[in-house]
Amino acid sequence: MSVFTDYEEWLDEVTDEMIEHQVHYAVAELRLGGEIGDYYEESGVIDRFVTQQLVWLSFEEMEQILDEAGELNLEIVADEAESDVQRSQVKQILKQSIKQQLVLKSQPFVATRLEQLRQEHPSVKDQLEEVRSAYDQVDQLLKSGPEPTIIPKRWYRRERIVPRAFTPAEQTSLEQEHLKLSPQYETQKQKLEELSREIAAYERVLP
Image (tube, rainbow, N blue to C red; front, side, top):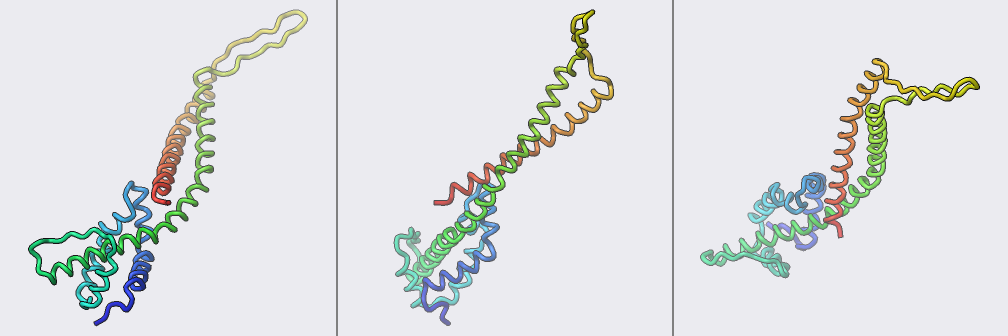
């Protein structure tokens, strides 16, 4: 049974299919601090496929794969039989070649996601600034107290500035607003930090 006619075309087709089903998980791996290639490798996607195909590869097809190896680093076990060495090398070539193709084909998806995040970033930053400004204003007001009462100058008296304190209702209202804004600020701050880290992770893997 023949697995492929042209090795490069076959490799292109099978990696396209893998990309269709797996690329979004691979791209998400960057957000978690991982690498795209590591996802494809550690998820078992490549290993399962290669193991299945090795059963059906003919001698001629394995020879073609070995010819296309180029400068890939291959491990050779000294006590393996010649046929086993060939199969082991073919397996390594397929794994490395498929991984390289998958990483390369994932880059447009990374670029698309990066562009989305860059467009989202200013809005999230503005939201944080709005919450921060409101929080700082209430916080400062609680610390400094209300504006004093100014009694205007008259012909029979000077202008007077009379300090005052918040009424119980005003104090309660400000404290409630302070409590409401505090978690909002922390949430927006965390969201911006996570967004910035994700952008940096995607920028790192693009040429």
